[in-house]
Image (cartoon, rainbow, N blue to C red; front, side, top):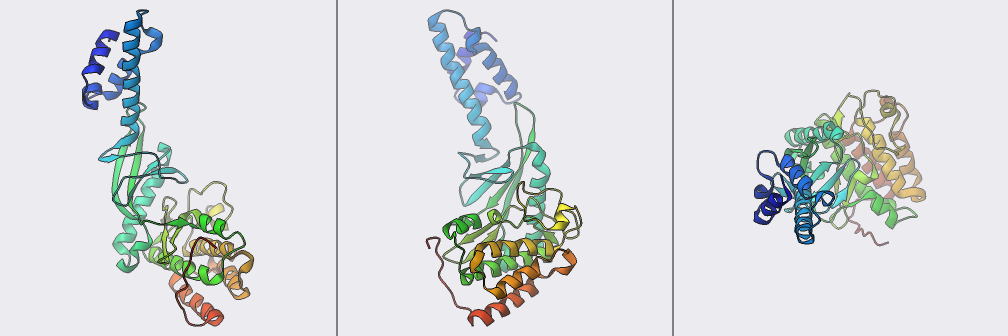
Length: 322
């Protein structure tokens, strides 16, 4: 393709389909870039100016096409960056989760499978404690040919992860505030474990709270496995994993329970009452078989400890501003 032909094509194109064609858009893009590249342009200043303008339009539209259109979804800048994927707000309280590397497609598939399984087998009363899988699709990069799995998740507004909560309370949280987070986290773990799913990465960044309504949502199910399976991938740089994860041994409900109790102890810090400190330690025994393995029964035991400490449950307003 000559520069003059490319200039005419760019000027006449009204849509991406006009510009790049429908069958082999990546090939058309390469042809246009080659014809309009500044290093290959004639010396005539008028032609160079026209060609450079066309070159910028082609590259800009190609980047926009690759980045902002994914199936029926239009993407802007990432709203969040997770451990292995970027999340884009696509409207209607939905986030599109796009892995940064195609090699993580298996983890995206794990998340989709876990959320489908929990939705099918779980008690509907507690399903708001996990994201809802709205859509799944595959995206092929037309330039490289690499395919990535994409999950679209329903979200709730006004959520904050536990890292943010701990930053707001650097000296630790009052155990009465941690109590409702702990209780609801055990509910979501009970929901998952009854469905046969181990989350596998119960870390502060994955536990989201809604302060006003005392809501909790456990996110990022990419590391999940079936009860009794081994967790094949872990979040880099985090030393909270129990021994069975690090040694590639079968995992179970006690794996999640240990990590959840670590989160809660970390939130309270030095403000943890002795009774709750002892309770949390019992959830983090070194051996999986020595730990509690029923989140629902553990919730009842936690309630007994809390009642001994504080009396009957009452609603305690919580804010991220100490």
